[in-house]
Length: 214
Figure 1: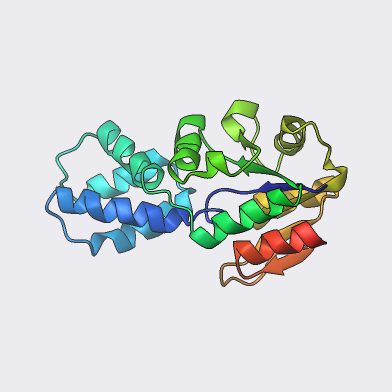
Figure 2: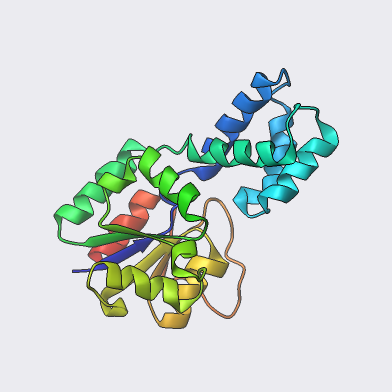
């Protein structure tokens, strides 16, 4: 059966929506309007801007009465504590696992934050394993992360697929290993010219069904 390696943030869960929900609550807690969430979200850049840089940008413009360290902690909680799984995604995961496929989350990031999201979204009950880059000591697109995913379920990459929203981590990593991939486009146009995903999907449910039946 197929090994389905799946990215976490903005693939299995809407990380940006969770972050924004937590951010609006944080602003309200300190008496600040929700409209500030717009520019903070832009600075955040889908979680790829380092947390100290995001915190400093906020402190330069807003008075939250927090130290930089406390604000960094609060920002991490915004996405971690508000991680939610859409019911149709949960159903799709259950469906592909019932068919005998193995599902492994493969995510870049710190262990504490990423495992917290996985647990809060209920994904720990819906997948076979989760690989977090900090624990491996390498980030996607490095091969070690994908090999760790296969090893976690006593499998190989010969029958694997990679599903994710990032061209430069998920799809590039799969391309380098000769693993077929599904890119979740999220309204974007594919940019790299030297490699492409095997398939492009509108939703994670479509991506899962395609990989499971390919």
